[in-house]
Image 1: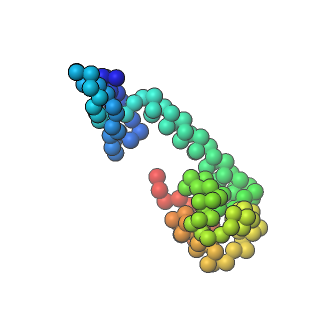
Image 2: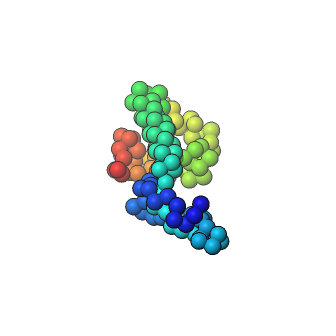
Image 3: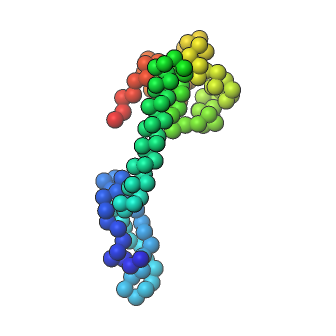
Length: 135
């Protein structure tokens, strides 16, 4: 791609940063050029974020239906998996799976709730009420 042809579409990160693309200059030598974004990449990112939003909504619905604890919701919301949450909290994965049931979650001690709240960067009351203060 020639340096003048590097896409300058409004991308998902266009207002935050620019990305470096490799292009060729007028002599055919490789060089770099900053790009605001690319429509195709923006579409792919939008599709990925839509999938994540669906997973978060499904997790929220499971919690509302009493099928899961708020831990599942915040894991999905924070894009965590069991291994990562286990690393943040120090709990075994099997313990976290157990804490994802409403019955087990309701029996957690204040110290255990603090660990989860800290891992998700929310307060304990926000953890219990599924409250998110970010846009």
